Length: 262
Image 1 (cartoon, rainbow, N blue to C red):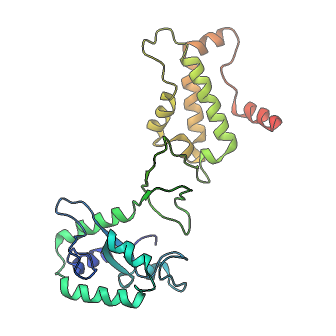
Image 2: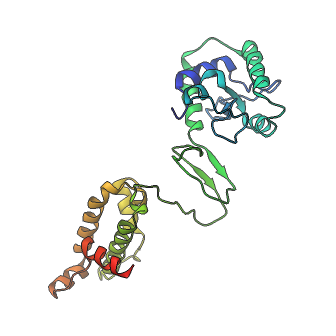
Image 3: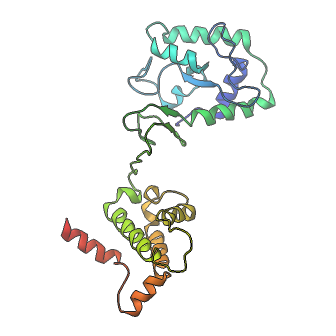
């Protein structure tokens, strides 16, 4: 279990009264506009080194109602930064006091708000990070969507294991095909607009659903076949063929050459 269940968050939201559990805090968990401003917080942290972490809790216990509390981002930061003051016992007492004072009966719309909170929980925003961010890796931030705020012009994404980008052979061969396509397509005399060398990568992304380096290796044959077809359709490739020249190496030929070069 990588996150709390919707039913657990629905109960947590109803008992919170849509308010931060910190005493006298009047900030809502979800604004009337639908903007999520609250956070699902763990009393005992999920990972070693986190605030109030204990090593004898299962994933089910970590994400259980008893170990969760809803807080605004300001008070979430405070309780995690000063865990020697905000102990697990203190937070459980704070949670109980708040729920007794602010709770309301579960309403149909609570299910909707619970889903909003879960969506926000699964989409962490990482700001001013100077190192690496690991996704879908044990003991790291987990999320299906990651927002990175940076002053750099671009962010490098290291391909996970099992993807085309993690395979030296596939990544180099597909890059070779993309280069050959651009070399052939850029010589098209009928093209009126400026040639875009990045268009073919976007075409792959649109067709297969992601940056090609992040696609699974089992799509290699499909992507390679797609690039072969795109190259062979170019006017320059047809000219090459008429002269008995090929416009690209096969994967086997490229692998043999790469093995010799390495």
